[in-house]
Amino acid sequence: MIAWSFCFLVAPEADPAAASPESLARLLLQEADPPGIVSAIHFVPLDQPASAISRNADLSLPPASVQKIITSVAALDLLGPDHTFESRLVATGPIEDGVLRGDLILCGDGDPFLVSERVWILAHDAAAWGLREITGRILVETSLDAGLDSIRAIEDRESPYSSPVTTLGVNFNSVAVLVRPGAKEGDPAICAFDPCPIPGFDIISETLTVRPGQAKTLDARRFSLGTGETWKVTGSIALGAEPERLYRATLRPGLSAAGLLGCLLAREGVRLTGATGIASEPSIGRVIARLSSYPLGELIRRMNGYSNNYMADRLLLALGADTSSAAGARKVLAWSAGLGLTGPPLQVFDGSGLDPRDRATPRQITSILAWSEKSERIFADLFASFARPGGAGTMERRFRGIEPPPSMRAKTGTLGDSGVSSIAGYIDAPGGGRYAFCILQQARPGDGLKVADLRAREERWLTEFSRP
Image 1 (cartoon, rainbow, N blue to C red):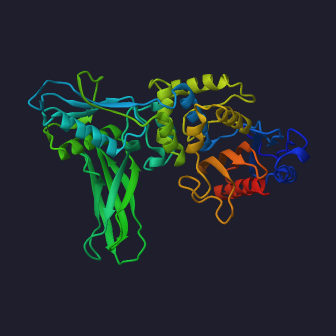
Image 2 (cartoon, one colour):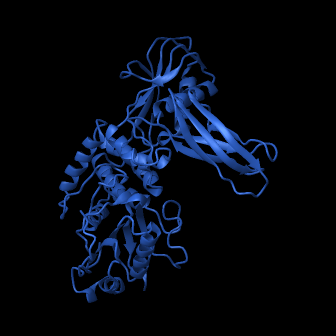
Image 3 (cartoon, helix red, strand yellow):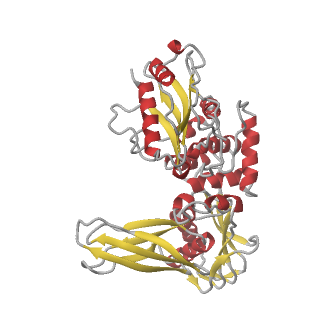
């Protein structure tokens, strides 16, 4: 439990006058946390004899998406940067003259980046193989992880930020509603699922095309659930505006994936006569198409750059051999114990940091970063996965107006409802040398403190560190 009384400052681990850069060490000694905020900080040099810079470095706090650093390094080490996930199309019946008399099942190892374009490759390869007709159903072999789903029950379930996690998912278990303006002002906007319709999924449009230049006010909400989903799209879009995609989490990810596969098969000329659904038992039959994922190192780069929660939690499932997220968490904890981390035990409930029960200390995070920096096998992919100030991804809008911005690569984290902001990664000192760093902050709920205020403190400290 966090004590919300005044937090005593912990002096740097060596004489602050010897710390590098000295300015940040002095600042942290002089500056107390405001009432209602607790901060924990650790900067450790990686390649030169210098002192660490610390404040509350052994205080255990929610890391938010900085948790993805732990997941990333554990996955890279335990599975390997070249590890791939395979997706397959399995025919359950005989195939004669291109006609499958049975079901076609999408199954596999749970590629975290199985998006529409890659499902199309499977559909295209099946058609190229000679498939012309399917008399049975289009099914997906998948199941929901109840542990991770319970975490998401407290979130906005329509946001792709907290989409459900399954053993196999497509498009991060989200759907995209494409909205484009009508032919003239006053017409309803045109709404459709992208890239194609989904059987059992419906759209009710209450949208309007408005005059050119007027701001769009679009939203999509799930308001009815039967065997599929019904979405209501509201708001307006300007005449002549570019189409807008609204990404939303689906509570029927298996049906969504099966519908997408069926649509893409039909576009490849495969005739379909059966329904779409979820496979009730493991798929047994003939593999007619298979597709390997990007290597894990590339998946980590895609995951961390935009902080994809689904991908991180899907990797935790993979670490648990797809049995459960709890099994994956136990694997991560056993792995981290081998690193000799000090302080309170890590608490791992997911791979993404979305769960506010996750706990880590800045010293533990920097220890993992320092260990990774020494691993030729891991470091290149981990370092490349972190965003740069002003670059694409989660740091695109950070350090604005600061020229030059700090020379750093970092993973950010935010839990708005829990008042958590965090940032960790690698930063270059102005006099040379690289540090691993971690800043974890939490504001007491109800004090009116905003995440933006916490981010401003982080940016001020990191800028101070980088000042010549």
